[in-house]
Length: 204
Image (cartoon, rainbow, N blue to C red; front, top):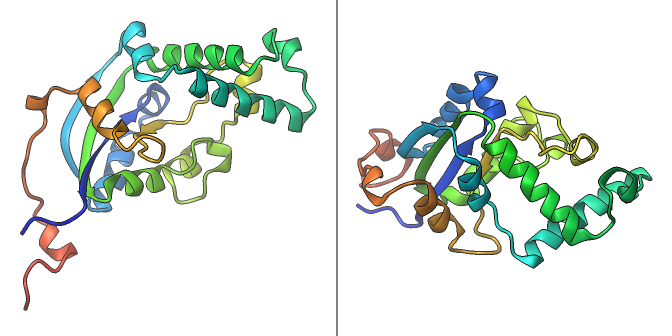
């Protein structure tokens, strides 16, 4: 029986998590939640490739920069003094560069996970994007405590261990990101032995 609402999503275990030896623990959390790994590879992305992973539309850049300006305002900091500008779009461009540099700074474990409502499930397991806000029990909540305030002052990406596709603003984002990191032939189709125990696939 084919389960309904089965999805695939992309996960990147970032260089900070790999260097800290958290790869196995992170993968184990996904597997214990009933998610299936259907593609997996380790690589060190080139900077140009890393830049292509992150969106760069004007709206997205302004949103990223706007979040930084909100953080600076809460902390009573002057963005022009540390970043040289108070323009949201320009700050967004800086953050894009920092994110790409960080993603290309070391080994990355890229994988495709499959499961029922996998996009939402994976993001729940990861926790909020900013580790300082992530709940205990999530990957970021348990293993990281960085914040945008610290990262921006250091002119660095937020070290938040992991990336997971999001379909809230763009329903096609998971498929697009999977295609960016993997070829179609890289994905392996198989059945988990635990699936029957997790779902009522047959009447007893």
